[in-house]
Image (cartoon, rainbow, N blue to C red):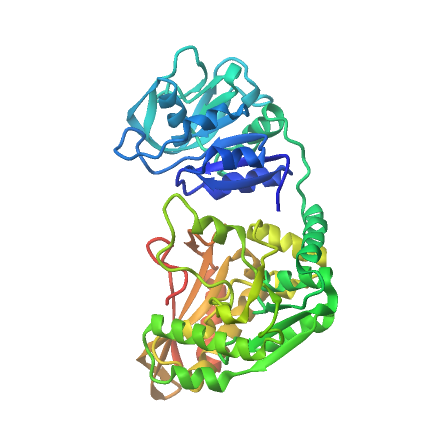
Length: 512
């Protein structure tokens, strides 16, 4: 959908780029991210109120360093450069950038020089977050220096006549104490943007857009029971009612009682559901397979076959609703280039062209936290909205090695106990994602007076903002003790529990 009154962020590869957009949206202003190389004509057609150049990992004086298009500067809207973006502005207007005598990574105190709209309402000394090795060594002629540190004399500058601004620090991260106020001063004060972005307005606009797009045609939704697909189903149902059929494929790789939760959600929400039982098909295909990539491919291919057989409009004109989110869209066109392996959205790994279904992706403009807000407004129940992410291949990639019915029974019980205990302890909502992994190894143990030789299970829990980076969760030791004791005492064939303390990077969140 085309938006008026918004901000465009041009992405130069910063790990914080998504945070810029999220902070601006939290101010009530729509913000979208585009690659730094986006043609100026495309930006002009969007008619943004302002533009932000993000940070990035490159050195501005390095060979092949990404640079903004010069005609972007002629759009006549305010531009704010952040970190690398500030250095790009300096170089484009005749300034110099070089290696800093003292690299700055982490918190620093910045002194505001004089008065300026960018720092309106803020103290003269700001605690900010720095992450740079290069600095502006000579600003463009006649540009005003508006902030500095002891090792960075040109920490922020401006050319008010041309509405150009730059800051070396990162206002978008939570470590910068008044960073949101800096962005607010730019977006609302300097750009003059209006607060008209809210999830309530999104629902109204999106509902009308879906109705116009779909018309009188039927539409299907691949429902996994996760947050994204459930909110998609609720939103599409609001727009088209009974012309929506949600299809849930029970592939035998689900967690305990997961299918029941989906049926309950659809019944309570008035969403028509087609429940397909196909566990036998999936498990027979996975027999003897140990390679994680082969497992993913097999599960993905079999899902497509089952979905195609179940789709009521498979041979004719119709639509498929899919829970694609904004981070998925960004990653596919990021400055770093297309991903080596495209992630399937929920259980949909790409449908055959012969199905002739046109995609409806109503959440493709939203971040995960915004999706949850939409879900709350639509009445999606907490047991769906608060769910941790769950991979499309399900427990198939949480059993290392061959997937069998016996191993699935073991892992389901372990996972159920783990989730139950962290919920009881008030830890579930503090964690981005938690799960158990069944390892293909056994260890010696002692239970009662007898020797055992049984499976090891690994527990994983991480904290994160968006899943792109993550840190292992510090679950209190007494809680971990209860979890471990309950698992080994309740689940047959498990005699040892270990906890994964690897962050991302270097590890991934999932084990396979």
